[in-house]
Image (cartoon, rainbow, N blue to C red; front, side, top):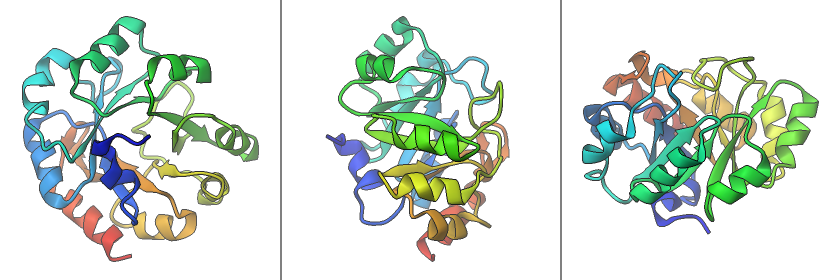
Length: 217
């Protein structure tokens, strides 16, 4: 069952839009004003967009309930996952590391997202067979976990999207998102670096342009 806060994103009858790597309240509010459906918050300490849970709790809980809030983790320990789920701040966990399907099912709750890197036909087949309720397709970058700005092979992504709902990520920006959606037909799209002025700092104009490009497609 898709949580209420994510239904507009995943069941809205049009590709939903998620902006990932939100680090500041003003960026979250600017994203919402631009028409973003969901926000991602990165709790991976090695990420340029990492935010400590204690630092963002106060303002995340003030965000509109109808806007999706997703906690992004990479090979997180059980303590952090327990804190994130117990906080009541997030509608879903996005597992973006090497987590097994069994681990995700155990710690993700009824609904979670699993990121799958695409690099070739074999990786597309693995992604298509993942049992997660929702997939996010990202670029394959050894040693890195998202936010690379690299564009994936949309034909591979389309193979996966043809079998199940997916969120398309990897190098999307206002200049290519319409073409990506036309090629892949994803349930939703996800961007981080494509709407930033610097890592972790979102650009309101780029976010508005991103939304406009997709809505006009």
